[in-house]
Each structure stands twice: as C-alpha cells, then as structure tokens.
Amino acid sequence: MANECIPVYEPGGTPTGHAAVAVTGKRCLKVSGEPTSTLLGLSATAEGGNISVAQCTVQGERVVGISNRDTGAGGKVGLLGTPGLILPVTAGAAVTAGQEVMTDNQGRVIPYAAGAGVFAVGLCIQGQSTVGSDAVVKFYGAPVRGAGA
Image (spheres, rainbow, N blue to C red):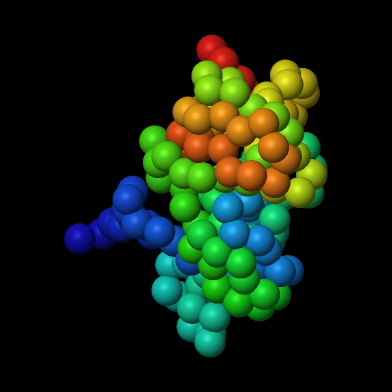
C-alpha cells in the first residue's frame, strides 16, 4: 500500500520521554525539543526515538503529559497523557473539586486563570488545600483554553 498512515502511539499506551533535565514524578511535562531520533523509525540511535521532555517552567504552558516518576537528566520517563486519565498530580496551590487546573512554573497544578497563551490541563476531581500534596485531576490530553474553549 502506498502512503500508509501508521500511528506512532496508540491511545491508552504510555509513550516514553527522554528527560532533557531531571524531572519530578507527578508533575506536568512539556516538549523540550525534537525527539532524540526520529519517531518514525527512519533513524536509529541508542535513545530509540523518545519524545524530548522537561518539567513545565512557565505558568499555563502546554502540557504533553504527567511524569510517572522521578527521573534524572538523560533518563527515560513515562508520559501519562491519555485523554480522560484520572491522575494524582502535585498541587502548587489550593485547588478544589470542579476547578479547571493549569500548570505553575514548577510543573504542579494550580487553579486555571484565563489569559493569552494559557492552557487548562484538566479538571480537578478531588481537591487539595496543601501545597505539595496530590490533587486528583482528570487529564484533558490536548491543551484547551479553559472552560467552554
């Protein structure tokens, strides 16, 4: 067959990221650059074509997934990002059930605040009033610009 479109990753799978810098588990991750080699298998390196990721450092930025564990620079980390996945994510501020959340500048979730270039990452299912504790978040999967976007 000519010109086939073969998925790189299927929904429900956990793609692997190559940590450009050390990342902390249960934090929001962003794409930090081109993959370590092609994702289409046209080039092979020891890294195996992992998505290059880093912990989010800008409030409200786009998120590719949530880190599944602490990982050192150069290590491999699972990207939990299937739409609808319900995950424990470290809170950077008090969040309550029913609030949309976005990332803070340390990859933690905080209440969503609308603004240019600001994206919601999910909906809080179980809140957390203590900074550094886990809130339960239903992950959107694709970045959206808040409620009704």
